[in-house]
Length: 527
Image 1 (tube, rainbow, N blue to C red):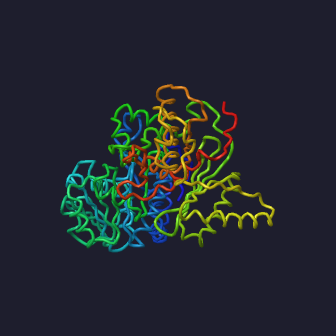
Image 2: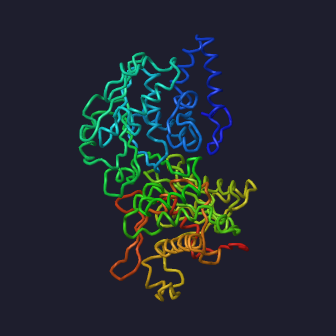
Image 3: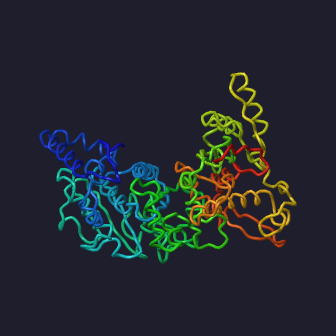
């Protein structure tokens, strides 16, 4: 749902928003018969209700000469999350939400809880956190129910659902008499041991002291559990669930927030230690894990690196396809222009009939991107792409469409340039366990050099670097830092793409194949 007027999140004009709301409220009060239809609309569009009437609170605005109480205008990713949440509720599904710090998720969860309670009868929405003071503490803005009370009281009286401060908000409870709906709060080991709930939010789920007790209790409490948290390493149930591939995770990355930019990110790096930045800003679950192949700091440096370093990244347009079946993994098709990774498209195997359908879809996307060379993973499922590709190309020829040149990527194949030397003087053959490890290591080298060029001013040939378009998905950004490396008994490098049972990083795999060392690629005339 759109904001009903143009709004600049970095240079906000809140006065005009309040004036707009006041005019709308005047019209409603002039014609109160509009209210039933309007409430029916908001029942189906809770995000629009928040945009139209919701307020939030940020005391940091005062130092900027802005009011602390401001309109809660949802940016695109927040609106997307609201729609996602409603689907989870109606489909009775559990799902984790992974977020960077300071993304407004606490306010958004309570705003949605209040809104759903205002326009739906007999809802019970639960909120749990590791400490009671984080759920409800009178006068403490960090508590969830303080936010919920404020959000409700800042609404026009017509939309408060009979809520009255001091009467319908006992400790750890907020009641909405007009619909019979309520918000309930619990903390610590007591999470999930109270009333049954339509939706249950677990705040900062990665930091619970005894998460397995909470898991057991909530399994009998709700059909829609939403865990919300920043990462806290890999050794907790939240990380296991996020990495399992069993759930429809929602990722809130700081680059999804229009209020934040690279200058904001640099300020965070100045204030925070490297592990905290990687974990809580860059959403890196493996921030403190040894052997991470491509650290998240390197990935962040590569975003729009060509702009930061002032070079032309463009050359030959190519694509790479990582093929999946109808299991939990997705197909991923990556595109690059020279050393600029432009985008990655992913889709579940269930959306196409078979590998033939995947190949046909990939070729159609190549048309859209004007990329007529595609590398595909020929080990395993992808082996069928060659035959299917021939058939699709024959069909394209009949329809007078340009042919797509296919190139097989054999990750289990022989090492490229066996006698060639790497940095420490060892040969490629003696250093890498297989070709896939060699290509992943080459991708690591590109990110490392790009990071050093940006952070330390080290000069490298531009065709040895990599630049990620800021249009690339948060999924790709997090997946690139998932693989780890170690040495086998012979001292050769092995890559573990899915440490601790994580799902395969399909989008990152497709980007790795974009830089296939055996492919004949023209990077163009880099300036």
